[in-house]
Image 1: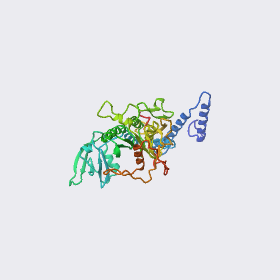
Image 2: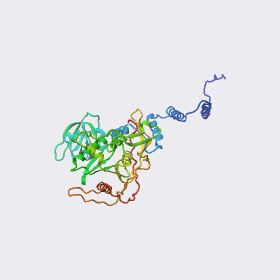
Image 3: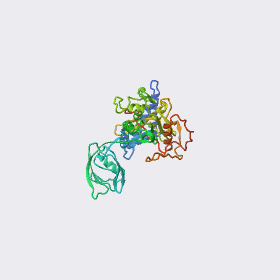
Image 4: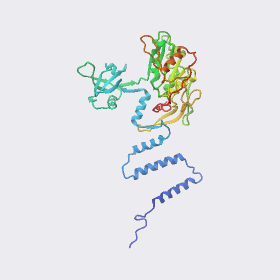
Length: 443
């Protein structure tokens, strides 16, 4: 029988032996003097070898992107509650959230009876300019009937590029026939600040979230409160309850309205944070220039007494503002201990429209207090669950908010002793985790 040439054909070899031999050779090479190993580099190479093996050897087709996304999500899942992989849509929504604007028509709507019913129409928006008001019903968008669509699907139709047209079919209360109109989409600011005048010329400022547009909204609200007052404003309540945070830059700018220029607001701890980025100080005031004699807002906000309301759902940037104003004795805090979310998130774009939100550090108040896990303790602790009442002037709506009533008492009698501290009821932690915030990336 003729012999098969050497090397031809199949010669069985035990696979584990090959693998072990390879590991032995590599291990021996790496162990030689002068060949120090980098554990991080070895881990990356191990991940790449596993990826290549799955792609080349698995008998079924593999979705590369989905596999990588699962791997990244697995890597960050055990780090902390705020580290997460953002897909393209989630990253886009986060960018809109931080910017404080979206492209649309400027209406708040609810879906009912196969139509978008307008709840409110924001001033200076395409919808308001076209005469759309509360109660009007939008039945089609660009010729597409809204019958059978979910609210999310209907809102997706309404969104688009700034400057692009959209056709609406609208039915107003009392109209027998629908009417058609074409509007132009434009950037719409998301309202995060609400202001009103309370009894005794006390200004009330509720900040729902910190976005890039929030400092400008705060300034406008302060101007409006100042001009609405019959005499000088007797005090200011800043309500940060139910505020999950947001842009740290916005929080710093808002603090600058009430503090001298170049005052320390917050410091950051973290090994990857550059030394120059570890300290936030107040920039030039967001206040109007005092050279304008018709608008003496600067002196007003420099001296107006302030009480800040916080509770267990005040988190992140809200805690930065509260802690800063408390440390500098610019405001008294009323309510219950805040949430205690004091980690720094950096958003790292991954090049394909997705991004990684990664925790890179922790915040400290100007006095050095660590926010993470500790929260901010109020100066006057008031449980919101107790009964409360307040008799107001005729024609004014009664205030039924025990924490707000205590704030008003302190502003009316700033030197009065604080009441006995009440016991907190239940946990301060909100049911859902406070969202992370953009702070380092993109500054």
